[in-house]
Length: 467
Ligand SMILES: [Zn+2]
Image (cartoon, rainbow, N blue to C red):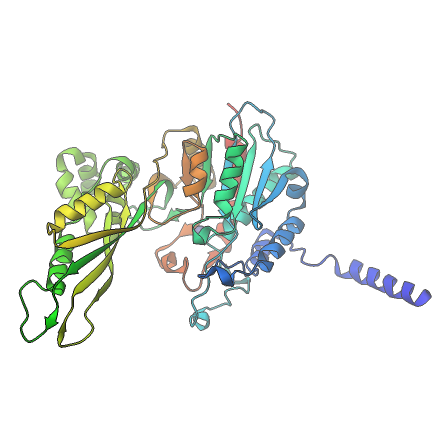
């Protein structure tokens, strides 16, 4: 069949001329390519689309051939990835680096506000643009670039290195990270430390004149309470005293005027001590003397919402309901209040405090969804020291400080596997970037990406050495 033979030959020649499809050439073009897969964690599970996840798996295998040849790769819970890089020393505790494959959706109606399409993977103006450029495909890709580079040099770790890339972090990781954690636990794996996303290199924080690499050592907890005031109701022409709405309002004002106690020890204390040498004289002095001047420091820090969220369990009133008609007294009024718990403040403690502050037995307190704050990882461990060295290897001027993560990460699952779990992705978060995570115009500076790969490379080399 000469005709068919000629056709196949033509295909072969064409393939040789064009090269294999989707073979991206540089780290930044590989990152850009990864941003084009619409690996979205949708609001309702019914909208989940598996195809982009499977396509991304294939893309990673093609883009990182050495990694896929040398490391064992397992697909967990359908769409999450677990890589095992076998270490030389089976007696040394393994380490885990983790990021996630999924991204949040683009808020409908905001597409037009993007300077580049959110799933275009466009490199322009010194940045790579798209969903996942910061949160958190960048972590997946930078980690794999570092591994690929080390393999090219013939590097073999002493400790076994696990790479875990969940597929549903933006939904809390109930399938991906939870299943990977269960799998490793079942295999009896106990880790020296874990490193996840969560914090970054922050510029312009707290008056410090140089960037701070904030290494998250703990994650805040979460609690939602519903406060319900009941009343008799009736016609609004003859209102009794203490109706449902004023009663609830009084409780809310009390809560608003009585913040939960500041916790200047623990995580906040470690952060303050780390940044103190770089603060202007008076601020540094007050921090150094905080056991004597705690009140001054506390009111100063409370003024700044970001610092306030680090030093205490925050109180946020988010939903208010009550009444249906202008001339009808409501029989109940309800407020939803969301708390973010610092380590040390338990769910039970917060419920008790709220009851004490409101001081009104006529208000029912219904306890909704809650999760305790995480354990606090040590800022004196071998893992923390290795992370700090890797940070300084990329830029000796960076201040490294332990920090508190106010959002949630997959480490709520992986954290069970280690005493020390850290949360840090080494990109620069400038004040103008804060709204880009989960927001519009998510992007990463091209120069920052090279630094990120250098960080993971230095960390893998350093932390995987058994000492
Ligand atoms: Zn994330």
